[in-house]
Length: 544
Image (tube, rainbow, N blue to C red; front, side, top):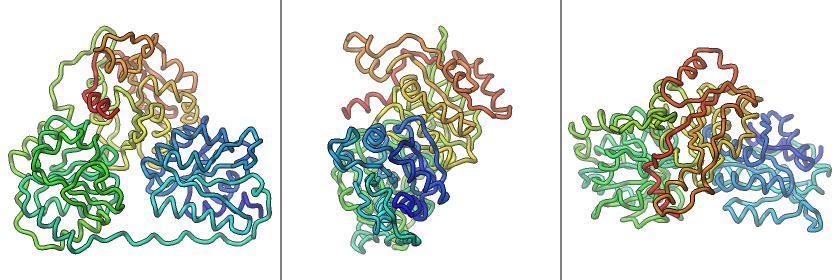
């Protein structure tokens, strides 16, 4: 057995069932070995797309994924997607072929690249230890929630490795339990609160954590919100506020800002989730629960932090003595949540006309048309709040938000990875025209995989965020505006069914596609109004 085979077999044996990538000479053998051992290989058209597919697959499947790349240029092509994964602490193993001789055209310092973006560099160091080191890479990815760049030197790949069974993946460490003192302190804060709000983030995205948080919120009369990456966690709960932060509806923002206690559960309470602190009223008690010590207070001052697993902490609090629930759950709040919470229930002036459709009108219509069992991947741009907040999702696995690095061009690959992780749901990719054209090559991947995907392009023929940010200054906008592009025609060239939408009546083609066999993907080239800056843009540019 060669080292490349031993590494591929060990990675698959440790729990990686999907590997994404673009194959070249340096990563050919290890990729073939992973496929032979039972992992599904998904060929992308660009390493950047492959990286984001792997990231999204891991986020929505609940297990690790792998990315396989050629030495040097294959890794550099993938760096934006790897950076997004690393910033999001996605359990991802990047299997990177590596040259170690500086005179090679392919040479770069791959360890330095990994460290520069927050990934963990590891390396296969010998034929005898190759399988063990591969399993250790998966262990780091899964149990430490890290993105790992596993360098596989070319000179080692063709050596003979011991033909033995790879070691098993070590058991997960026990989740950290909160201290008795911290439980008592948070229990007292909950008892004193009259208007508590829970904000759950990535650390609360599990069935066990959700169950415990729902029971604890009911016990203390708390309203429930999430960060953007945990959208859907409290779907259909009558006391849910949906997303906290720049995407919040007016009512959600009002109620969060009216809280006297805000508890972040596996949530950083960063500038996006708390609108740069404006959702925290003077005198509000702010608490953060997290299982990582350095996360506590990293983004804002806390009254106190609790080191502990979200589910374990919530369960410990449920066991503490509690008085009768008071809290925020009043009949008046219930009535307002039922009638005013959703963005689609907020009145607006429909700007549809002159050959362009209002993005709110478009997205509300799509929410009504598309099946409820869906998984939505959203790119970045002026448009992104509309699909994020006007399209409902069935649970936290139905929304994949690769926005930690704020790069455009990731949305289509996000939807591909999420679609493979949730094959029983309709995948929906929501893109701007800039991101759609930037990664149009992955339309071919959608076609090859025969994904029944709906790709919605909010097409304003511009980098809309920059247009609306700089237009008030009177600057020349020619660098961020473009001639009209027929993206529907481009999609047809890739084998899609495609339609151009300029008004609500044009959505009839979407209904026909939904009622048909769905044997091709559908792209909607929506010519959206160009005069409407999205409500979240002010928040976004405050962080620049």
